[in-house]
Amino acid sequence: MKLHRNIALGIELGLKNTLVEKRPAANVIKNLLKSNPNWGSRDRRAVAKIFYDIIRQKRLIEAALGLKNNETNNNLLKLVGGWMALNGHIPPDWEEFINIEIQDVVQNADRLIKERKYKYSIPDWLDEMGVDAFGEALWVKEIEALDKPARLIVRANRIIITSDKLKVLLDKKYGIKTSKIPHYKDALIFDKHQSLNNIKEYRQGFFEVQDANSQAITPWLKPKSGKYYIDACAGAGGKSLHLASLTGDKAKIMALDIYGSKLEELKKRAYRNQMKSIITACVINPEIIKSIKANADGLLIDAPCSGIGVMKRNPDAKWLINPDRIEKILTTQEDILQTYSSLVKKGGELVYATCSILPIENRRQIDNFLNSEQGKSFEFDEDKTYLSHQSGFDGFYCARLIRKM
Image (tube, rainbow, N blue to C red; front, side, top):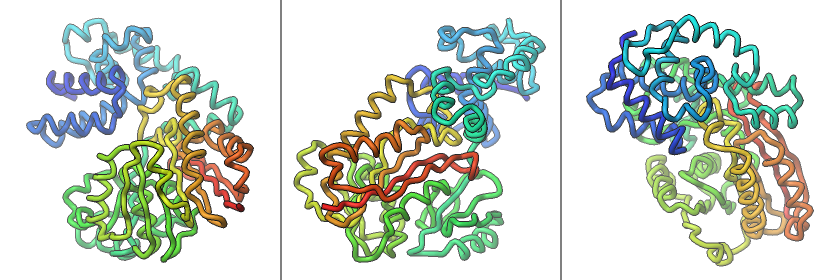
């Protein structure tokens, strides 16, 4: 593999953006590729692969190179050389790579991967938290599954097409091979990763990218046409779009978020998906919640969380969070449950979901809410943790509560 310096420096910049400046890797790589239009397709694929591999294997690579944690931020380019050494490539004879002895790096890595925290490149605090939550045997299975890159999965937009017809269309028109996923009616899993931007039907809203277990969340609302649903933390609207698809665009869906830019993106996606049932409202302060009539048949709280369950596709999650950050997230989750639960009518359903598998963000939050004054109006129905090692997909949690008074 011949690594050009401008490519390596691009990767270094991406690593700085994510590991030092704490910007989400997905946004970083998108902006990095966009700002370098002269890179060829092969270079772009190499940049994305090396960038994500280093994010995923950061702790192993830096330890194999002999870097201490506090030294990494000043040696990000050296991580690229370490990646090359561990993947059978000879690093260029650049000054930054001059002390990289390939044999030493490989031997160090072989020794280090006997320890779980290096094998899966996870922080000590996360490993300890996982063992405490699941026990060592189950945690090993789960972290191994979360360490594997996510596959490309899409959800057919029922308003336009069924998953069966979409499967045939992709094969006949584009030669793209996909498979159905048992128990996920609208899902198709691609045989290999590829860009979707050149597929006309994707641009026209025939389907959306969405993990299979993410597709399992919205049905917890038991969606029906003619009902009124609120998506409390809608973001760019993946769950709102799914809700509209499940109801044939014949429900009333209010999508709320504190970020107006995300709701603007939702509006664009809804238009592309040929959906008219979704309205949006930017919650710039809690007073806006009080102005919304409390008569929702179903409320979805897809709460902000640590993102531990989606490390397959967002491996940077383990470097963007820490125990202090999780404590702040827990407070936010509690506040959201207390504030938005008032929007559910008597007999209505509250569905709480996260893309985390940690009990402190999930069942413990539900139990705390039910024991609060506001929570006394609700009763627990059921919950489920979707573990990655059991399905091969992202990890999620979902709980359904019923308002009784």
